[in-house]
Image (cartoon, rainbow, N blue to C red; front, side):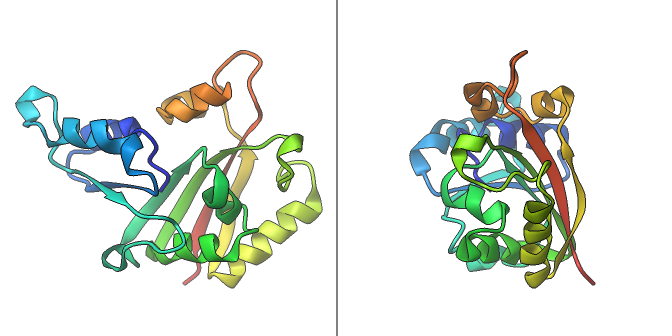
Length: 182
């Protein structure tokens, strides 16, 4: 979710040729080039296991509801960021709806104090609010920690580079995983 320019979707599809990788983003223009590239024949650098869909997190396509074994969110902003952090109920519910039974959400987020959003690593109250918000959606927080430089680089996120999350004096990046409760 939050595909952006779609490059990470194509890379993930190329690395996992037996997995269907679907990129969803509310802005069609950002992922147009990646969608065209993925549609090329495999011999010309395309992938046959990537799809792109224009959809906001508050109203994901019903065809995808409950289908995602792993829903990844990389460096979200706007309502998607607020949903991942548990502070936007509509976005949080939309994201949760994509996850299959026994599925999970893996998120990399970069937040600064000036963003006015929860500080997940340094504030116990914010970690507790995150856990409670996601428990209401049927999830548990499995992992919550600082992301390594390697994890940020491996994300393939263009947005991470724009944020400065890959530089030596990088923004702080938090990684967390949410698993659906049985």
